[in-house]
Amino acid sequence: MRRSGQNKTKKRYVIVGNGVAGVMAAETIRSIDPKGQINIISDESVHFYSRCFLPHYIQGLLPKEGLSLRNPLSYQEQRIILNLAERILGMDLKRQLLVSRTGKRWHYDLLLLAMGAKPISIKGPHSHSNRILTLRTLKDADNILKTLRDVKRILIVGGGMIGTKLTHAFQQLGFSCHLLVQSDRLLSQSLDKEASSIYKNLFGKVGVPISCHVKIKEILVWPKTGKILGVMTEEGEKIQGDLIVICKGVMPDLDLFANTSLETKRGICVNNRMATNFPNVFAAGDVAEKGEFFQQASSLIAIWPEAAEQGCVAGANMAGKNSLFIGSIPRNTFNLFNLPCISAGIFDASKEGDHFDSIEYKKGVLYIKLVFRDECLVGFILIGNIIHNAGLLLASIREKVPLRNIKDYLLDIILQGDIEPPKHETFL
Ligand SMILES: Cc1cc2nc3c(=O)[nH]c(=O)nc-3n(C[C@H](O)[C@H](O)[C@H](O)COP(=O)(O)OP(=O)(O)OC[C@H]3O[C@@H](n4cnc5c(N)ncnc54)[C@H](O)[C@@H]3O)c2cc1C
Image (cartoon, rainbow, N blue to C red; front, top):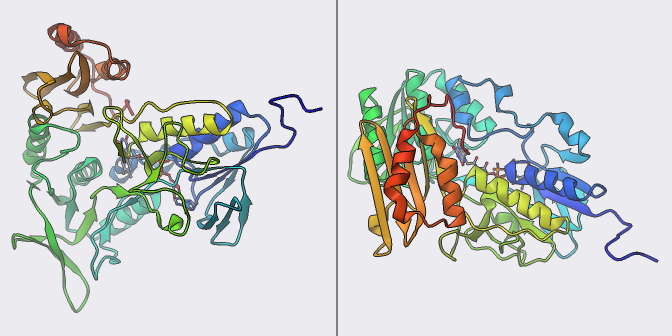
């Protein structure tokens, strides 16, 4: 007789994606289920690495090995079967079967879709030029490095985290570059106007122009040779450049699910257990559309720490536990010109209405902003040698600690810190 909760057969777990969401899920499953068979499938041919440090790799601050986040032996030790260079092209969710481009097949009992997202590009006749690039993978980074050999002026399109980090890397390498931003300011998803202007000024000091409110109308190409000349903006301005790197954000690639009844919107819809509308199919990381921490609406928040946490939650639930994801808190960290910054949550109280209130402090390039909704902290921006306070602030947001009545005291505590800035991001 079988005792309750004991299953003699091994569960077959299949995870598509060897990024942080996939790896965290696999390791969580193994920590709960010592017997199950775990397969990770990835279309990349390299082991798990940090995408966040790709700009540092391009800048030459890190060797290729420095990007690596797992020793290949650790997969063997945990008995996780890694299938590299296998792209899943077919999926039958009813028969619980996946097929790769090479014809390999995997049957699963539980499936995790952790396929990340792909960069948004500018569509047009020249989008396949090797002088119009995006940055998502190590292969993309190597492509950029190869192209840099004979480039004179680089146009970076998109003033988000990746575009800004990349512009900094190119500038530090001595390239002439120009950052083109569609919104009203640099890093508009992470910083308010004040904070954004601090970094814009730093770029200005080293001669990097940043143009805001720029919409690209077309990419200019020399017709005979196909050589990239620059871009034409909607306002009719020509901006010269012979390499264009497009950093306009990412979107999940949902083509694979077009003929399935998996529920998708902009990403794969999941509940707070990271489960999809198929009871044995889960999704996590950049591909998943999930509830936001501050409101019930679902959203795509494509950041590393969220992908890691969602991977853990999905893995635990796949292995039979009941684990809940509390919702995504947008956050970003970077260190440009040796000036570190961390922002998290809601940072623009003026846009949000009556229940919001904020406190700010600015001295030179040091900047602190704390945003409250009712009694609780809901967001912050820290710039300077004070970023080590971010962990505490983030925990206060998560735990909804009522801090508004002591906001001046909180500001004092943050200002008391004076530590050396970290060399690279330490808070992800
Ligand atoms: C240059 C850069 C800098 C960044 N900087 C930061 C930062 O500072 N802070 C931060 O929080 N986040 C940053 N991010 C975002 C962060 O890296 C992502 O949020 C995170 O990697 C998402 O992890 P994931 O596991 O969901 O997806 P991914 O890491 O993209 O992994 C998905 C994997 O699935 C594979 N895959 C996809 N489709 C298939 C298929 N059909 N078959 C087989 N395999 C498939 C992909 O090749 C990939 O290996 C940065 C990203 C980039 C590119």
